[in-house]
Length: 100
Image (tube, rainbow, N blue to C red):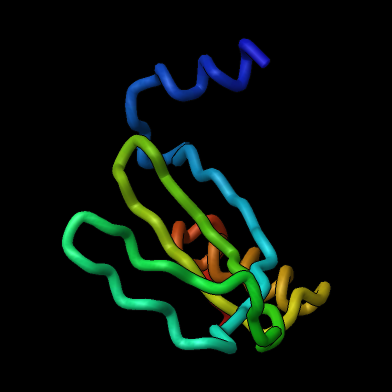
């Protein structure tokens, strides 16, 4: 773990970018009952019931030393979706020549 944390202390090198990648699946929901509006001094109240509206998958790249980030939201998470994200990363940082 110390070796990984050490990466964040290195100076920026454009030839060897430090890029983090994460993905997350999020459930999409909507309210069934309209929330009760807040009165002065009160918080807005929500009912516990909700309508399930499917899921979305988030792919995120982050380069902490330059504050660059890229987020892509997809309807699903398949091997092809993952591969497309990796292709984007490689082409974005010009790690290989783009296909002609």
